[in-house]
Length: 175
Image (cartoon, rainbow, N blue to C red; front, top):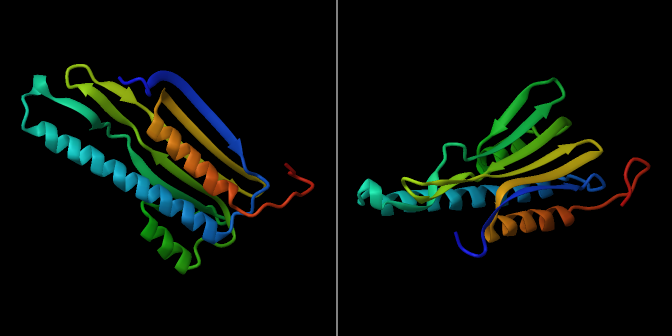
């Protein structure tokens, strides 16, 4: 483990309830998450290829598959029907088909869990980023079990994107 990574409990929660979740802004944040997830899967694949030709006891991973990694957008419609998108393009298709209008809620879930270390002694790195959009309630939550510069950067980037959403102060929320 390098000096920039340490085991800790991270549970950061941000309230963006005075932001206006326009479809263009939501689309941009989903595009960013999809790109991060694609890059993450590529790191796992490259690490697996690097280690597959080594004997079990010599395998050393930076990004070993944890089987919990995922990117998903959950759209709950007012008729209680729930739609799921697994990537940016499927979300764009739903926008085009009018399925992201007059909805109950929208949740973006990005899970970047992986394992790191020698194959016989792997450490779990848990990283979840959840953004929830409901009327008068917009929140962003990051949970991790290690302080890592790459995951900190993703958290900062998501916060910067959310800060660019238009703001309106109402009787329900002003900041």
